[in-house]
Image (cartoon, rainbow, N blue to C red):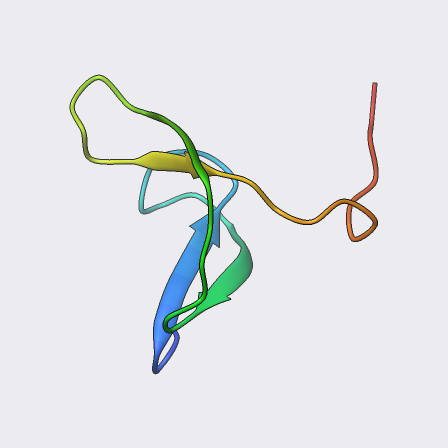
Length: 54
């Protein structure tokens, strides 16, 4: 599923991975790191909307 005006946030860095969220068009994010092949980027999300699991 692709958002009409934004990006999918995936559980893992591959297109077959489950969509867990979305980023709106023009929404600012902080990139934490890139995959070695530069095909994927890890982003920050606002705390309080997540739950830490051990």
